Length: 156
Image (tube, rainbow, N blue to C red):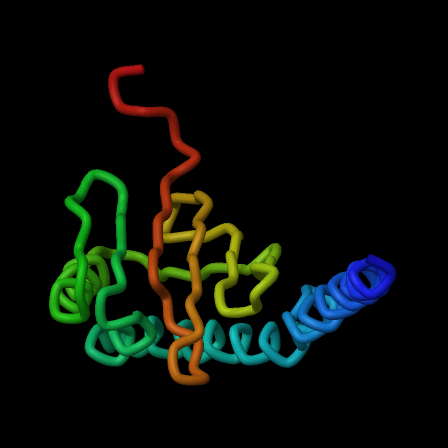
């Protein structure tokens, strides 16, 4: 009986120690280097803006994940790089220059996803956007891109 109590006492001490060791192995938000990842995303955004100025829809589509989606206002969602490229090609043919400005980038606790929230200007139109970035094979790609105008809805 005394041996069983010793074994139970030892197990009671070992299990919490093992749990703490496992938790220490799991990445936490403090352990994920978001500064470097934020810098990488901001560099991608800068390159994206360069491609917009060049009206290069094919290059813009490469910022998206293979299954990424763009969801412009008053248009159907385009999913997959080919569809994304066609949608960007149509948008780039509209008159006016497009610019956008990131206001906030927030990372998931695992560090493999990020939310990029900001504003845009397209000709006379002003609005807001959200891009969800996903880290794929060490590279940040847009998984979802949605934006809409600050203008009142038509007929309202």
